Length: 95
Image (tube, rainbow, N blue to C red; front, top):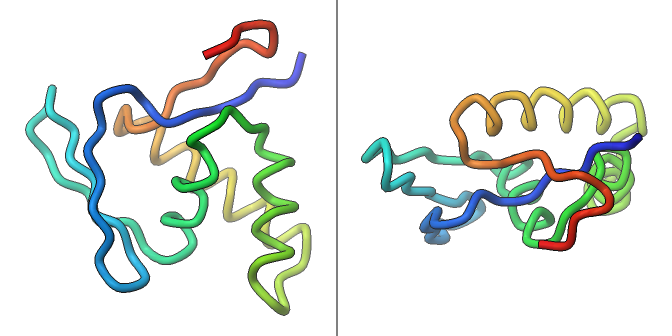
C-alpha cells in the first residue's frame, strides 16, 4: 500500500518571499520552510504520495532529476513528519 501525506490540521502558515512560515499551536513553535519545502508543503493541501510530490517538484524546478527530487522529498517529509506538521494518511481514507 502506498502511503499518502497531507498537511496536519490546525497548522497556520504565512508566505515570506519564496519561503513559508508555519506555526504549530500545540508546541507553540514556528518553522521556516525553504523554497523547496514550501513547494512540498503547498502540494500537501490534498493527500499525495512521495512519488507524486517528486514528479511535481521535478517538473516545477528546472534541472532537477527525478532521483534528486525524490531524495529531497523524502528528506523533507521525514522532517515535516517529525515536527508533526505533516501526517500520513491511508489511501482508502478521505480527508
